[in-house]
Image (cartoon, rainbow, N blue to C red; front, top):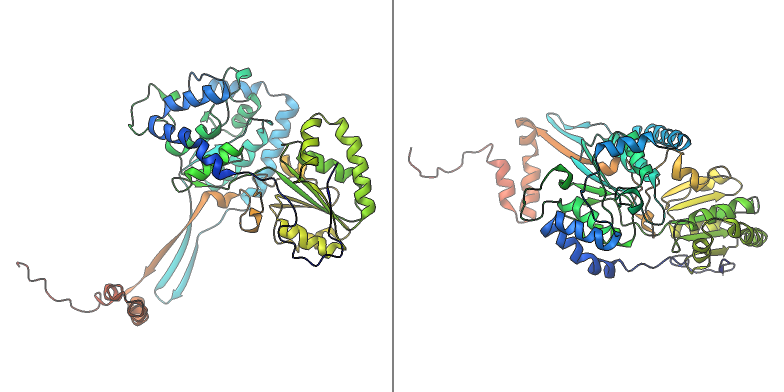
Length: 450
């Protein structure tokens, strides 16, 4: 079922050796550009039109009534409610420790620089509702924003025809548990455009009531399909975004101590998300590779989303990579920079601490990716498509801005003046130096009336 890539004996640079699902985001941008621009120009009317076209739902309102959010929480399955509360509690514990404090550095006597950490004023948190309705993503978006101290949070999630045009009830119930009451039943590119531009349109026309009004946000976070990703790319600069999320990925670095049952189950768990999901096993054990293939044959046939899983696992983006040893394997997975990296080897923690590139690392036989998806306390909104080389997963920092506050007294500035003047003249920007020396010398009179 899984393609095999044999790199044993290879001396090639590992970069680019592992395939990935290919998404043409640039092409998708051009397809959704008219939708985004229509929302920018016409607001509410364009959002309704796009929602009816793409989701088959004619919106009576954008905003979900608070009563519907409260009712959804009351109707939650008790086991689901308990699980969401555990996920919230654990996520709060982890994310609370990420909070930064202001730091003041005395650079010279009388001269300080303070770095303040200030939350953005308003954020838009997107929660998908396509192949999988991800109530857990409500937790992963909302908790770090709340812990950062963001004063205004809004959740957008696609309307479900089966729920009277409202978002999925479990998503609404999760919002209620987190105290989020501003929720919009809008999905796709039109949701991202609504969050970025607001729903009033360029005319700024008065809307009938608050159920039609969504004020624009400063930052948009959360995963979504290619249309959501394309819209985020188009709005970047108008708003901040967390990342351009692609199909989910799992890479597993394993040796002959790993259980083929566990490895196969974990590969399937990510393949379940999307036919384009990538599931990659990197191992120095041909025996393990063969055993995993046998397990996949058994487990895939028994899984609910068999067709989707088979398409993912047999795709070019998935496979088993054979390597000479774990050192070569570590180089391969480090270059691949997976969204999720599992290490199921002897000395797994030691190897994990040597990894430089991964969205999140799951160590040992009892830390599967699905634990991180729901109840580990970590965040599951993570960089994909190799972006873990330069980007981090969603965290409290995603919603904070560092602002430097500079405060020098007269003596400190006087002592610094020669350095400022020297550098200003070297860059042929003499007025920069004069802005300092003007504080210590008399400037010529302007000649104006007394």
